[in-house]
Length: 257
Image (cartoon, rainbow, N blue to C red; front, side, top):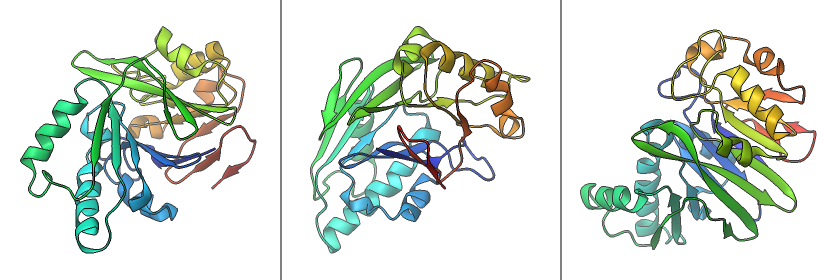
């Protein structure tokens, strides 16, 4: 089980793409699709036309906007080269309404030459191939349901908070996982709303007995701060400051750069 960070920043970070992750188990899965993550996906060497499963935590544009380019490219490829396999999109309540509205609105989106399946998930596990995925609602924005995902494959596990504040659900999501990738939008010296700071990430990892903590989703000020040192005040296990195109072998000590 491998996880490649496609985007470790947010919005228009000058050096990082926004949120996005490539999960490789028995088949590739994309989790979130923020601005500039599609370009990083191309750099991984994974054929984008073979990807059949997309997970979305929520629909703030810094987690979503590159889907538009990806989908238009998939339509063009299927019309002029070869038809891609079905595409299944998983997300929180409201997913069907958002995508159906988008497909009606954007030119050429309404009748793709491949099947698109929309699935709304919340708190019930589901499987993709041999991979078990557990979604849980996170605390983020009053107007936006945000999911975190726990992914399990061959006795290895990874948790993705999406955008989140500290909550019992987040601790549960990360309980005893091999790898937890957490929203570290802020430095502990300059905390903000709707997201966690580095110390809070450390506290969650400690309480959940996470084996390895990865900090991600940085605003510029957090990126300039020593977030690893701040998180280490509470979590004594391995801590990685995420960066674009960093590949992590889940459950192993090695990190492929």
